[in-house]
Image 1 (cartoon, one colour):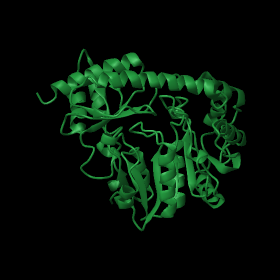
Image 2 (cartoon, one colour):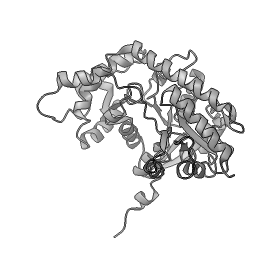
Image 3 (cartoon, helix red, strand yellow):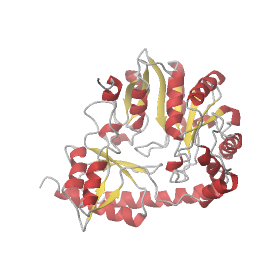
Length: 394
């Protein structure tokens, strides 16, 4: 008896794999600031629970496989408020953005095919590809140029005869870069030249800073090769609700994803009711969330700027910053912070960035910091991180 090769090859999450060390620190009485995971501390809006109470019946029944009709219409109205033309019959409600990505990948590629990513990328993309038997090829963006979209020559080097799609997040998890309209237009042009689907993961759409207007790739182009992935997890601080959606105007692609949706029966029924409430909140709510994260970004960037020897770029969106540390191995440093270091009874956990790359040997000195705690806590956490860096290896 043995486990599958797929299971053996499945990468451990760089976001979660060091959690046992964090738990051991807590067992020793050490307070751990969790900056490793994108779990906001902002309260989930009460309207989520209000709609569950208002709409929930006595039986927790299956919903339609593509989601409750009224929720699909609410998602369509939400997209419309951002000038994104997606009708209710062009989207499927999914169990979070994760399932939406898996449906999209499974619909455009077969086992043995390749998917192009822009590294560093959301680490779970690699895991989703592995589950589906897909290979990951990556074009590398660099901290030295602000993690901008690689040029066409660099993307061409990551292309193979088996490449079927380009998958990326915008704003980016983990770098916080926000791609411009020119960059997205160039990416679409490159994809069409090479007969590739474009899968745009837009779960941080409204969390953009410095006067940038939230947008979608579908405001630039909504062709048959464009797929949009979305989720309520981040903008509404409702990660555990597990509600997302995937949208396309390609009817054949939609029918294909619908078969995957039917195979898993339905997305979570109760959470769908709550999501209808969240989608009534409008721009006043999302603007307030954006302002809070922009303030946290400014605090974190200012505090990190005081640390000698680090390299970073100020993020323009999402709630992450990728930082190159003055250490040889960031994962060993993160582990040491949990096993051997504390300051005033506290320590910090961040995510090693090596697992956000596909290319071996890069990202080993980098970490991702999620500014998901209050500004006061983030300031305290970065102070602890600074003291840890100063004391590491001495």
